[in-house]
Length: 352
Image 1 (cartoon, helix red, strand yellow):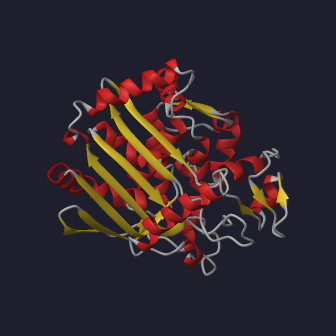
Image 2 (cartoon, rainbow, N blue to C red):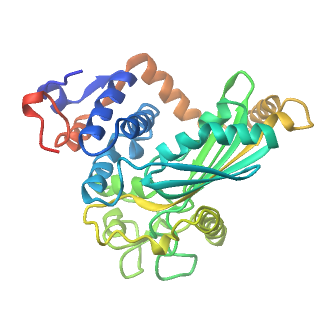
Image 3 (tube, rainbow, N blue to C red):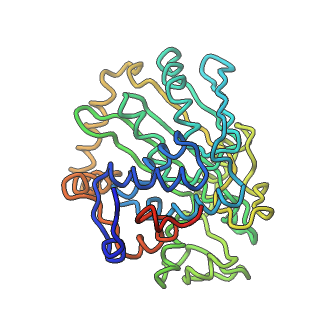
């Protein structure tokens, strides 16, 4: 598909497949294999389709800047190794995490189906996407899925003065009978760093308790957090403890780098985090309590009757349905973000 310059300047509405095609061409032209480009394009397009703007088109320049810096290998060879019945080790080869997980997907599901539970410990990987996308497909296949990943140190421990943890997100997905999976994805920081960057770009004020400036002074100014400041954990000591758990599962268990060990200094422009990720699957069919997926529905109905207006992932599914019906609208600001990398015509294609 060719996007004319006027449409790109004013924004454009695309189908999901059109957006994937455009992004895949961008990724491949700027340093990835066709396989990696396909996975990354699908990941970013799904986030954009589902309304997760902080992990959609907005992220593409960060991927490309990291590729250009040489910090990540866009042609990495992934090694998948089964070291025990339910323990799979994955070396992403200093590549992106999503293609590494894609390679481990079938062995992980087979191990979980055979043993009732299995995990994939991924190291030497750069995770830069929305974590819910890593677990939702497994729940669609009938598995309970849990994933966590550490990242560049941007969050101070509770009561601390310097960053030790990344945003260290945690995602969970469970199958539902006759309905899309129940999924949640949360950063252990008060806000995801992508949301803070978006707020800084638009001059928005953050709620109290989200972060501190470079001097450790609490601030609601997103730009001060981005410019040398740090995030705070959600829920005080409780959030900090979960961040610590994620750090141990994602870095110590996998053999990946601790958040404080991630060093991008030799690669100007790098934005991704070379860290670790753990994905755990449980075969829900092994439950002795009847259909687990039916039980999930029962709990969801109970929550609704108790007054919870929206379940986790409900807004994403609503956005997905609207995008599938009406197309995915990419606004002018997002197009401007992509403009240096988009090939509007072959003659106007910028150098890679």
